[in-house]
Image (cartoon, rainbow, N blue to C red; front, side, top):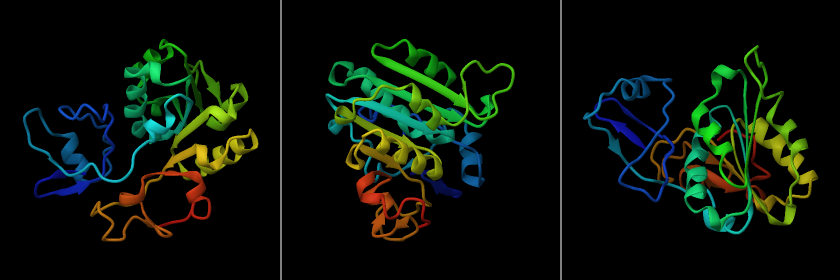
Amino acid sequence: MLYVFGVGEVAISIVSDPEEPDFLDHTIRIVGRTTQVLGNMQKGETVGVRGPFGIGWPMKDAQGKDVLIVTGGLGCAPVVGAIEYIFRRREEYGTLTILHGVKTPHDLLYRERFDAWRHQPRTTVLLTSDEPGKTWHNHVGVVTELFDQLRLSPDNTLVMMCGPEIMMRIACHTLAHQGLRPDSMYVSLERHMECGIGLCGHCQLGPFFLCKDGPVMRLDRLIPFLGKGG
């Protein structure tokens, strides 16, 4: 949680390696008063920080396995830290496949990162756009169409997924048909978070409080609730 004194507080993902606490990198979308102030801050100004809260990506469970990362839109931001974590400990993980979809090329964040990731060992990066335009040289369509280009080992693959919930529901359904079990798929859900400790109820989803039980949760725990409001 990032706090601007006298203005407000917002939940923002950590983009940098979570085990490097001396430096925190955030990607902030300016959509309201607090993020507007954050976006206009200059070097040396003070930002309040609470947390981290909740449960993040299952990096230990993924050790020794192939990792498939599927994101859409701004959903790429919460997985950047996990990707960089893997690259810093590359020998501990199998193949890494990164799939990311955007509506238009203008919506693509981290262009330089994606280009750099393509050159990492045992790493595949596939991008797609719904409305490509003339300068787009990657796949055209929705991100789930990229599954046709993959050769997965269902018994040795762990999936991390973040993006619009409709995309994640379709992706999980498609991957299940390819043999992946629900307990091998993890999704990051977005709800309005305020207290960060499961008391205010703003982020409740069924029996879960996403600020405490999530935002990353294993699919087999979420199947009855995915796609429902808080």
